[in-house]
Length: 156
Length: 177
Image 1 (cartoon, rainbow over the protein chains, first blue to last red):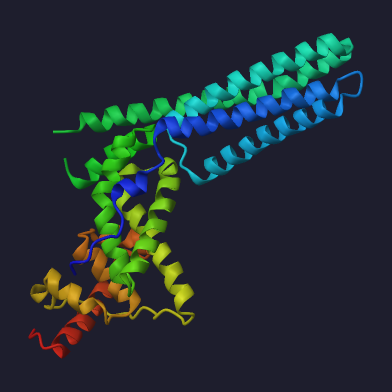
Image 2 (image 1 turned 180 degrees about the vertical axis):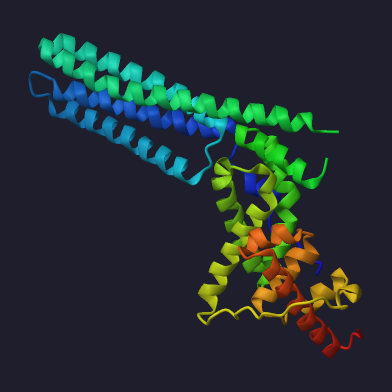
């Protein structure tokens, strides 16, 4: 049988480069942080916003949510390697911290002490979750690096 | 470094996120996977589609592979599942059941790769795949057993029956045993 595959190994690994994978993650997490902050700003406005501003806010929230959807879809379809998991963990910690800081800042200027505490308390949840993700990702990577050293030690 | 050690190191490097290791790993197994799928199916265009499905599934599951030294049987298990899903869609009839053949025979001595390849097309699916894995991809009995999810003893008996069927098929085509 002299037939050959109609595609190459490069075709198989296309789209697996690190900048491409991380770019999708940044877009998704940025979309989540942005739409959350804009949504909170809108919700805590003391007076009704002009129609044009409402339209602009709605459009920005929609764009953010769309990027979250695209990133989620890409994450489900593509493999998540150790480096990706560590980078994802760091990005999640950074974005969740920034989002929490901004929501607490908004709460300080616009709501009561209870509102500030509620914003801070709610914001702690994603920070704890993302920190746990990061710790687990680093442990997974460390275990793989140890395994790699072990296998390289067996090379003739 | 042997094939198992080489693959294990490439798998671990790929799991770490090393794209070159991933490309090298795919490069090593690109042809064998395609040839396995091609010999199990009738048409080359289907082999391309199904083997690309195999790679999509394998790459997605690669970060979760716990035992990198078992990469080859793991990959062929995925390939086999994809082929079987494809065949199941194509033919709604039941697959042939295992016989209980046993013992040794003298047919293997006269088999070479070219003859195996030529005679494969007419064999039932189970017999065809065990010959492909054992003779054309040089997987060990234990590895064939892992891929086919049957005991090594059943692999032996299936090989025995497959060789006899293949010999009959080749004799019909004019080869002498």
